[in-house]
Length: 212
Picture 1 (cartoon, rainbow, N blue to C red):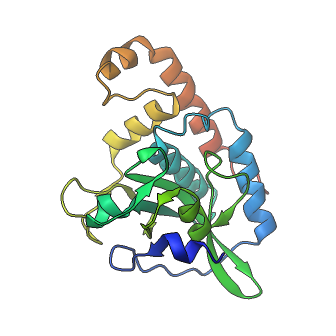
Picture 2: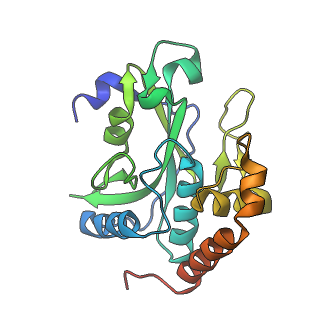
């Protein structure tokens, strides 16, 4: 995609080195995309909130199903480097699951993000699509990283998954944001919804890959 090189850049300095031994076909990638696009557990119309929780949930499921996965992060130029550049909706960042796809023996990372796209797309296309004003920067990280640090963003100082942010992930899937002003009260009054969300997530995680 020619325009992807005009509005977004890959930032190797923050990205992880990844080795892919078992890439997928594009047809398989789009089957994965369609599955998550249509499952009620993922509120894709809530595009302005909880992208990190959707991405974390999907990568946890893909890992349980033995499907290779990573996370793609895109940052506005202003947020990451104090340069010119904004994302759509004035987001500082956005994140989506990535899966490796091999086409003509060339491996490329494709994003799974029905909030912003209608099919699996190369990560550079995805990053370009959510860039409002040039420039943005996208990175590829291991899925074990939940969120970047509040201080300077470097390669190896990201926050790894733990029990606390797993709880946030389930709450986020339920459409609840504990960090919002009314968040704690919403969580306390929606325990049944949270339990329903957790049961469905665990059913998917423990039930084996739906793509067998």
